[in-house]
Image (cartoon, rainbow, N blue to C red; front, side):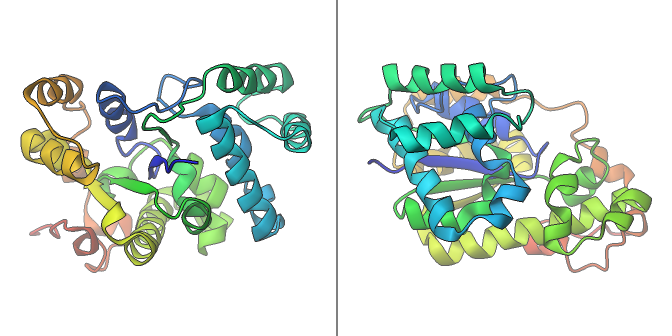
Length: 277
């Protein structure tokens, strides 16, 4: 089984743009994608805190291995197929049994084969150690956006799903969502960074979305180098076409350290400067 290229992040960090660039560069990022470019079969299987924290490491990694076999070779064991269908009785994002059956059939009929393949699903970082265990030669791109901008984001899916598992109490999420989101931004991104650097080394890439928007040529060059791709003029043009400056790009400038409960130690962890006032 060939090794995947995985894109993860906190939701709303800019992963859709990165996935779109990879697809333009010929990477098979999946055929069951939503408008945000999330690979929904992976979503169905792994965006499940109850499952992730209840199942054994062995069974979780067995499911990841089965997902990789289906994506790359088009094969799935009948017992694993039955488990995935049973999981659909408790659907994520309304991905019910007929949808899951169709998604599996799509990959059985057209696997990636020897082509570069992977997926984008922001929640991937939550199980990064298990991904590395199953796919030791994988490449992982962790996308990050300024913590102040993320603190004010309306996308709180990950915070609500996983926050308590990162030590963030439900009461804090309910009463102080901006501070809770900034807290989650720090601990979740730092966890992904430390695990990625330790377990993957040069196969881990921390991509700040601000760099992609403000310095597209240089950042696309670094991304291509990470993927061991020769960035020709056509690929550069295709990548630049995809990159846009979001209307909320400068939202972080409207947020103060007091708003998010920042003690000055968080932003520098990821190369961001603390506000000057």
